[in-house]
Image: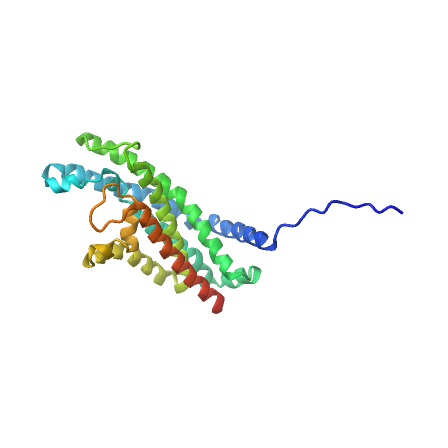
Length: 269
């Protein structure tokens, strides 16, 4: 009797399959929420509009600027000023992706289906970061083009080929993605939408405002200031290099996500 053998196809590692299921599940939850697309639209519109308003103000005030102000003038950073709004809105969307599940109790079902709680939070962070990046990137490109068209009336415009400009646009989108990861971390730690949203506003906007009370050497390491530094071409005292700013935001993102993972692993949903 002859035995017939068939080639055995190795199964995907269990961990890889779990990660794939988590990512698909988190993307389905994010894209099926109407608030996701409204928030993306608001982030686009308001960030572009905020940049245009600042550009108009700067262009109109050029004649009254001092020589030092003109020397430090940054046409790129002005155009991308609205990145702060995009970061707050998309960061708030990210934290709601966590707090909404805690509020509704759905997080229990999620953790029952996917017991690897830390992987679930990492999957949420990866999905919202991947969603935020193209939104911020499109916003940055459009805001830059509009801003430079306005500046052209005063002959203050720069082009995409100008040193540091393209990097500012790209790194700005990366910075917003990292803010989204911070949002997931804050949502996982605080677990309440209002509290996490307030914390996000303090981290981004409040940090820039109250950071003026700190020495320049420390001010640059605040999340909001680092976000601004990511889109800065002409550096001034207290402003980090764009690459360093991204590293700083990455550290904040890792810390908040780790804190949320620890709480999720050791506390009931």
